[in-house]
Image 1 (cartoon, protein in one colour):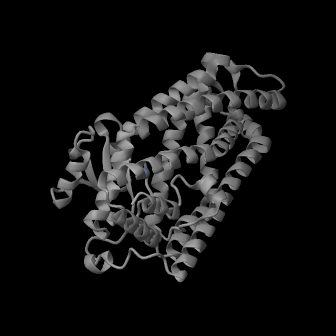
Image 2: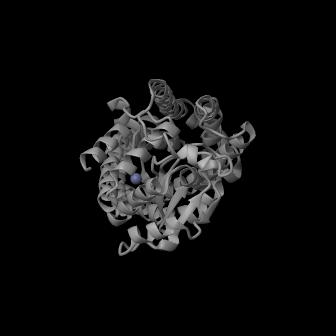
Image 3: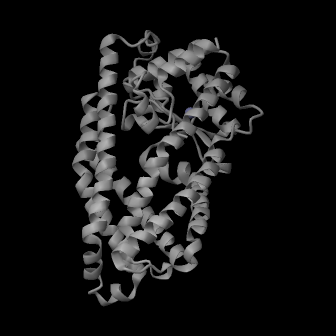
Length: 399
Ligand SMILES: [Zn+2]
């Protein structure tokens, strides 16, 4: 699970000793002001992005969906073959969406990150990554949408239960393949060589079932100066990934506590619990979508039959699912923050080194320009991790 354990700098350019000292102090007033400004702007762009998504899907659903579908039907093949028409419609919908939101993505992902000195990407490489992500989302999205329509067409009024079960299976497969197939498309990942750290890691993971073979260095520094670490994969692909930005910048004690936090996620079965919670929440989500979708189709077409769910209902279906996702976001974030606190506690108990923990978080706040004390609304809406001030306060308490 992605962690806001985020540090920086390429391997060659990091002056280890200087970088590693003096970072444990609290942020200076100037650094604090900068972190607050960065967090404020990120929040603004995040909200604008969500608003734009909803507006776009609503306009397409209300105005363009039926005429575009009729226009596609002029082709005899597309008229006859509904599944193909659905995929073509989805491609068009996503392509225009990407164009509409490109200026905001550029502002939020490229300009903002550069303004605060957090990104290392050139405009060309940023564009390449943007296209790569888009291609992946389009390919994967087309499969999901087609699957969802087939489930509605075939299983009728019970589609939402079948869809939730299918979604559960997809999350397991994706969880399993994420670290071996998807992450390597974006980052260089290599197994960590034996070092002083491996002994520490072995001690911490002994008896937990987390294989010491599965500790990897992930090359985040090509993209960002931010530090991060994560536990990813399921079953045999389960592994801990530590950002090179973290490995190069943090002291062995600090890396050890961050690693212990990831072991905590493994021992406490957080990935499985999140997938289980996802099953419950998607069942509710698809059930509500069922009601909303039926009334929309009746409103637009006059009649609703599951076996004839029209292709033109796609943008409304996507809108309903995104609104539901946004409503659930705060709940998912709250669950995630709870798990993060549990892992923090686990790490503090198993390393008995709250000094290194506090130092690591202060360093992260500094490197990532992470506002240590964001507004509660921002925390509720967008933060999957507790604010750093709270994590430091907990470590102090457990001292
Ligand atoms: Zn975590």
